[in-house]
Length: 145
Image (cartoon, rainbow, N blue to C red; front, side, top):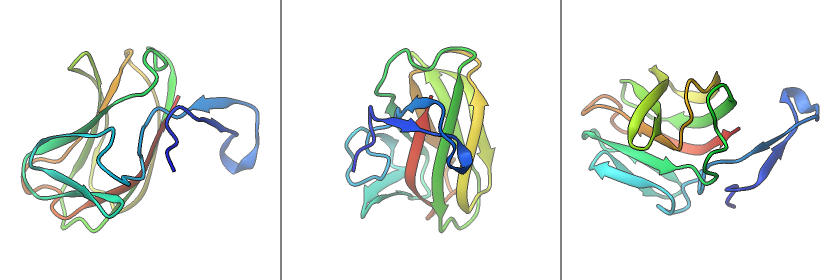
């Protein structure tokens, strides 16, 4: 099921009170639709994105241009499994230029980031340098604003 363009309602703990736009297409990695792979760092198959241990990025232009403005709240969640070690990096870009680093750390399990955009951005880029996240898989990525 694609969440792209849908609205996510509620607050943590089940309280309602606001609506947030889902900005990612195909966050469940049912296919490669919506995702661009540079280099040979990632493959998308079987409902996950898997890091191959090579250099490169996995990126997506957000579906709702202009929704995430400087000073706006953003939430990112993703499930990470099986890395042999190393660091996962998540960046925000605007017009092809990095404007904010959102995450850089070792991780296994569920990642939930809440941040304030330091600039307007239109693309999310996920990377791991050569050999730094080999075998790690990503699933169920969601970005809401």
